Length: 220
Image: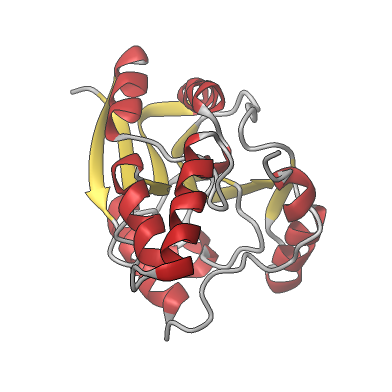
């Protein structure tokens, strides 16, 4: 049985980003900010905002308005402790749609908890909220093409019990039981974008080579 991610994250106040990488939030935030672009005078919606660990690094504090959405009350409490005036909403990011219009809709390391149907619904809802000329940014998506090498290399050097364990973890992944969640392909996003009259641009991820970022925009 796969992990109940809602139950797990609703008990957390820490996004569990790597602690051993110096300046992780700064480096990763700057990388994402290049994909997001200028936020001045922009209306921003962040889905799966968590504790707000990337809020100022990406530059969301420079936006004309910002709303953060997360289903974890403990995460949002940690966010508000750091930024008392921030606008937050307790809701499920996979189905959130508030009827407002946003210039930037952003998530990071969130869609790994969405299966294909949830991903399609998420993009459809985001499209409804996307202002003319707006951008949907989906950050740090586990790349399906790198799944096998990721799991096999995680237990390197290949040999003995470690290699057998790697094969077992990889096999379980293909049956939908994966410690990371769901892996997605470039094609998933190109098809979803096309269905809504958007274009999808794929970017590599420096911090996590087995992940990628997506920027969706209205066709010009």
